[in-house]
Length: 309
Ligand SMILES: *Cc1c(COP(=O)(O)O)cnc(C)c1O
Image 1 (cartoon, helix red, strand yellow):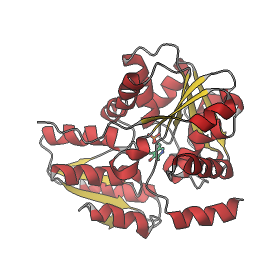
Image 2 (cartoon, protein in one colour):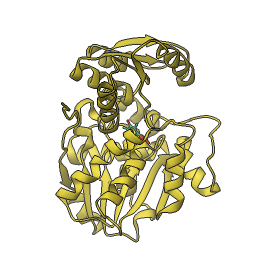
Image 3 (cartoon, rainbow, N blue to C red):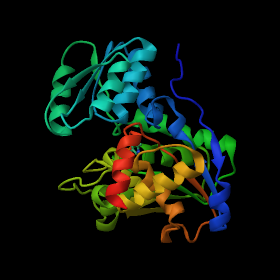
């Protein structure tokens, strides 16, 4: 028996923005998934597969949306879940994860340390490490976003997707293939301080950033998955990055238009349409994947707005 963990999310046509740009802009509202981001699509699929394989304990290192999605999957399926977070993870997120019944363990000052500790925990019998982005099952789960869009609209000229480690992007590429969206371009979005995909595309090789320097913490993978790089060079993929201030401003404009608060990670993708960036000049109909994110409180958003305006 498999229960689907993710929801079919609405597709909104952005009337005001489309009129302003004289284009057709669609928002795929993955911010309306349980736990507020697309993550449950891929992570949820991987968790289900693990249960079918007989595992009885999920372990993940993530103070963000992947940790939250894993905790949700554990709660939904009645599976013990341990989420290891670094000390930098805010109390706001720790409490959300704990509220789903997961054990939150704090270890190390950075994700890498938390990850090493998480890996040591899975040595115990029947525990499985859930990877946040670099796994084929995660990609095929994330691809469901395009399966849904295929029932909601005709194929657009372009899809805009935010990239951290590239798990959502790999899902999009898989989804385009399996739905026959042959003429749809893919545009990847990042912030300048987390541009591991854009840099890899520019240098034509997989690179590792020295550090992450952005408020878009959900994009903070220093290196994208190898599969993301390979898709990036093979297909017609364009990459761009915006400043933190631009990503934040796009969050503000999106909130004003739709009433939804999303993370700066998602603002990076929204910025292309809200700031009419160069990268969308040649295309007419655009699907923006609103990846969402639960890591931003209104208080923090207000603080950022005063800092960046
Ligand atoms: C995880 C996440 C991303 C990046 O996804 P990847 O699969 O790591 O590329 C973007 N936005 C939000 C809100 C996320 O939670």
